[in-house]
Image 1: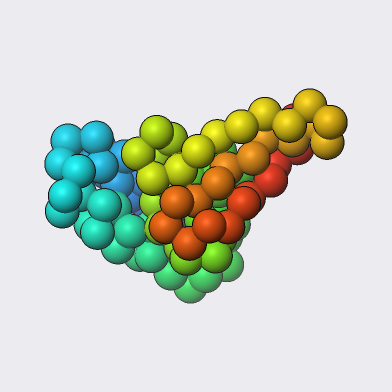
Image 2: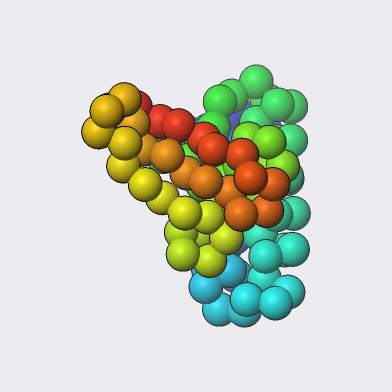
Length: 98
């Protein structure tokens, strides 16, 4: 598998995870977390990084898929010029500059 195909699969897995969480709140989060795990494994195997826009969609501590309003809280911190993603699963705060 080439790197281009691996990137396409990573993007597709995140799309499926987003759709799964939106449709089914009970079982969907477990499947979405599994899709994130598979996407991370593909990235590590083919030595490609997950794109920046997708990197914000999972917790870097517990590796769970983050859906704002469902299992994470998003806040803008103008003092530090950052967007804070607070994971409700593990309590970790992921900060991304803007």
